[in-house]
Amino acid sequence: MNATGDPLELPEELSVDQFWGFFGRREHTGLDFKRGVNRGLLVAIPAMAMTSGGYVVHGVDDDRSIVGCPLTQTTQDRILRYASECDVQVHVRSIRVGGTELTITSVPEIAGRIVTTPDGRLVRRVGGDSLPLRGDALRRFVLARSEYPGEEEIVPHFNADDFALDMINQALRADGREPVGLAGLERALVDLRVAKPAQGTSGPLVLRAAAILFCKDPAEHVSGATVQFVRRAAVGPGPAPTTRRAEIKGPLPRLLEECLAMIGDNTRRFEAVMGVRREVIPEYPTQVLREAVANALAHRDYGLVGATVDITVWDDRVEITSPGPLPGHITPDNIQTEHYSRNRRIMGVLKTMGLVEEYGEGVDLMIRGMESRLMERPVFSANPDSVTVTLRSRALVGVEDQAWLQLFADHSMTVEERLALVTARSEGAVTPRRLRALRAGTDASAVLAGAVAKGLLTRVGVRGGARYVLSDEVVLRAGTTGIQARSRQQQLLLDEIGRRGSLSTVEGAELVGEQLGVVRNLLNDLVRAGLARAEGRTRARRYYPPS
Image 1 (cartoon, rainbow, N blue to C red):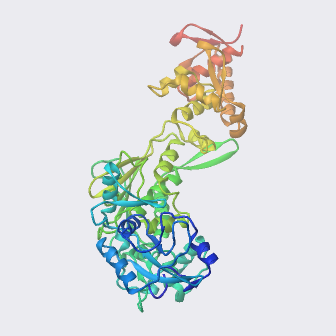
Image 2 (tube, rainbow, N blue to C red):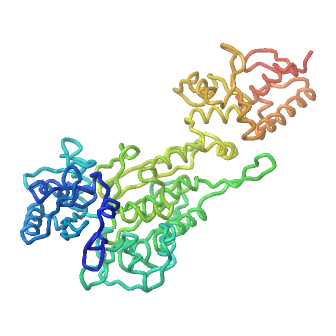
Image 3 (tube, helix red, strand yellow):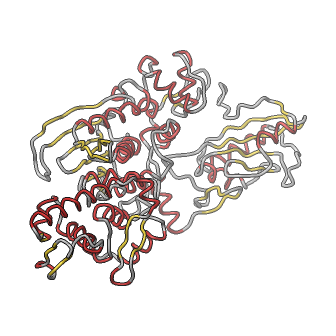
């Protein structure tokens, strides 16, 4: 928007080619061509206001010939009267195209309230049409638009020194713009859409979104724009000793990083030996924590004065609570499939800076991240006052197996397929019976067949004696860490059989420190290879040197 309040930064005169080069010939969500000024504006204005705003160009016929529509007093009065009937404040200007005068009506997007046609219809732009909303779509849209986001509030006392200029320039560079000094700060905030352009002789209106994202201490302008961190030495849910408490402040991008560092300092890290490498594994997937904290900061209700984002680390879980209910029509049941952003300005900047995923993908990313390590899914709970995401540290497999599974984090696999894969790695093979024992209710045959189809496992044997081992592709990609460990365990068992003369499964489990089922598979593989022989059944079975 320029200094006169005109949203279109166009010269007063354009050639015909320049005009079509700017607008294009095809109507769309934000563009409508009209020959003159008629009652069709009573639909076009509210439709654009309830979508994303746009422009109505008067003086262009349906065949895209430029017929002209001068901005006379009558034209302006008629447009403003139609806009008033819809309760929308529009801007009207004229432009000459190839010597012909046209009139342009600029319609703003309206947030925080519902705009209807004078006869009460709620319409939205879909392509070049203005279509009514009906039924459940109408209900959900009204729920979403009934909230006025706190990020839209004006910061009453704007001071350039309050802002972290380096953070603003980081966002500008990410947006493909040149960095600025203090003199260009106001314009930069407008370019980043966290300030509204100047009106007349006044400066731009700086929004809460700008303070939250870029102020050195946002809490000076937005009470509660901080994070309260607590570390409790227990699993709850009741009161527990507090071992660490801190208030974390700063511009939102920096606040995100400091929260992640604080969580990292107060959760465990494990070491896993992968071949000749020693891997350090955080207790919780870093990408999942990042998305959970970013969502809490970006989607919270900044209209709730004094309310903070709370992060509590327990011995077995992390709880991240943000103020305000779930936005719009979102519920814990549809949070994975439905998407709505309460603070679109903040989300837009974070997306530009690469600090959040594509819109609507955050929940999916958290779920996939936890499942990639065979950890429990995130739990989302909500009440009228807050939304909480709970991440639990429990997993179906140990840390070394979790580290190994990260080699396949980019593979599309179900939890059951990952479990089959890691079992085949640690035990040498997996059978339908073994998989059902590990995951009750699993259609083990279908899971294993799917893993074979994806090139993850290879079937060995037929019918009742079928086993599934790691495919050559998996071994090539992930190395032979598990196979080498299995070979060492088998050698220990063989040596002990030779020393003792025989060995039971229980004795073997004590020797190598593995579960009975794992050791039973190891010993039976030795028998199949002709390196040992078995006598007896089930619990009474013992293993001897080959005859």
